[in-house]
Image (cartoon, rainbow, N blue to C red; front, side):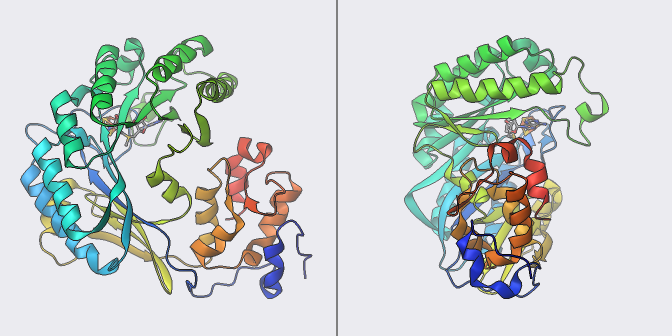
Length: 409
Ligand SMILES: C[S@@+](CC[C@H](N)C(=O)[O-])C[C@H]1O[C@@H](n2cnc3c(N)ncnc32)[C@H](O)[C@@H]1O
Ligand code: SF4
């Protein structure tokens, strides 16, 4: 039998499992995880060449009435699975949710309040694109209950915005931020870095512009070439090399910290108390239901954890959801206990501070002893912090996060 790692005292509780995963049924004794709701809006004005999200260029008016009826039907069919559970956060993402009219968002919010156990201060985020922003509509969204807006700025450089195929320019980006600030107090700005032709100096200027608005949250994403996108087939020229990318990343962390925003996840930076509760719930391996085309869910029951996905194509999803026969569900898969260590670590290790050791048992219902081997290996390689209270990547593990997560496969 392998030696128990002294760093994690919890490991010594179940020595029988040390060294091997036992593929036993899940059994939650600590209560179920917090529950979030994701709503997918699949339409955009135009498809961006780097984007692999389930988003589709919409010609003409959005079919709002059919979409809302289908959302209601989708939610009604999900309700029996979450009976009695409180919704912790709501995220309306896309696609471009800011294409929805104020009346549609109002109807959507009324529907959520009608069907779900939502607290008055539940975090409710709506994703918005600068090219579709309108001051009055943002205010109306806020009156309906949206209390956080996430704006897809991407860049303040018109040349870069052109290469990225965005429908907005930098002045529209600035106007959209100002409109959002008049509507809600909680704002996130999405920006991408490592853009074609970007240098340390030009990237710094962009982030300084973003920081100058004083928003509570920034999401800074390294531009990636996703399979099946236009950029995967025709990559833009002049992309920064790996050394420049690494230098950009270091600069972002320093610069945001100087302005009081702490990096708390691979791409997320926030002022104290302003972390995105919805995303943190994903990273802490919480539960979520997803409604709308292609929306994913993860739900814990007393004896199992199930992943779900809805039909991806917006038209088929709308047709099927209203039949109330479950045909809008594309996938329903019970997770094996052998899948759980990797799934948990894939999320939890993205958090800069990691998670308390107890979170592993709470969220997977498995004993930490079952992953003693990879934990031991990660510690030996210096990829995990030797903190007995937390599962947390070390500075080296943070640099080689994929390798660290891969140990739990
Ligand atoms: C769901 S997407 C889209 C939100 C919104 N429709 C928009 O584009 O403004 C959320 C964010 O993911 C980021 N993103 C999408 N594709 C990316 C890629 N290939 N590389 C890096 N970031 C990406 C963008 O910053 C985007 O704002
Ligand atoms: S607007 Fe956003 S969701 Fe739509 S295609 Fe562009 S990046 Fe993707």
